[in-house]
Every structure is written in structure tokens, then in C-alpha cells.
Length: 137
Image 1 (spheres, rainbow, N blue to C red):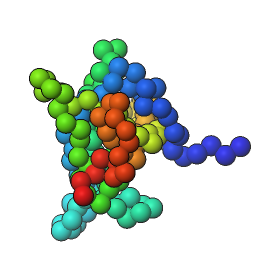
Image 2 (cartoon, rainbow, N blue to C red):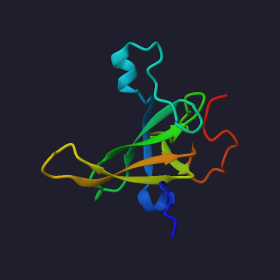
Image 3 (spheres, rainbow, N blue to C red):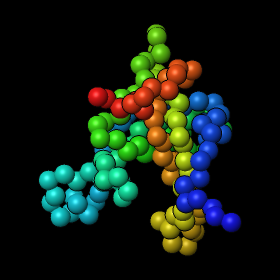
């Protein structure tokens, strides 16, 4: 049996009450920052493209963590969906969402299973998937 390192999941499984974009920022490589590299942005190991963190608020009132980051790989900064009319909220759905479980050892005496999220694209809920995956041209 071959279990994939990244496990595909449905958006509705991870965000049953929806998600709302707070911002998009580069993912920094702290080793590059310490060494004084001109471009400290982390790159994907497979493609070499820059990595971006899409900060989202989980709409589920029972969620353990209200804000999470979903990483995306793209040559240009991903563009979030438009604001919902009359509100300050940007509802979003992620395409090709995967979960990567890992052991978080930040608290030495209490390691726990954590996970990171990665998506292939983002779009407004109910919209048809765009060819560019929500990335600026």
C-alpha cells in the first residue's frame, strides 16, 4: 500500500463553514534571511517556483484555530477573490487541496500531530475554476 505524502481532501471537509481570505504573503525561508540572501522567499522543492501563504479565517465557530495558512506555489502572487458586496469579507474555495500531517515538537514534552495545507488554486465560492488558479498574469 502506498500512502501519498500529501493527502488530497475536499475543501468542504477542511472548511465545512467556508473560509475567508485575510491576505496573501510570501513564505520566507529563514535560512536565506539569516544568510542575507537578496530573495528570501521559499521555493517549492519540485518546481522551483515561489511559495505563497494565503491567510484565511475558518468560518467554523467550533474550529480550534480561527486563522490558518494555505500554501500555494505560483510564479506570481495569487490574487484572492473579490469582496462579497456590502461586506469586508472575501469568501474563498481552494482547488486541489492537500493535507500534509507532521509531528509538531515546538513544546518538547508535548509533541502533537499537526498538518499543513496546500492548494493548487483559489476562487470565489460557486465560480467555475479559472485556468490560472487565481494567480495574477
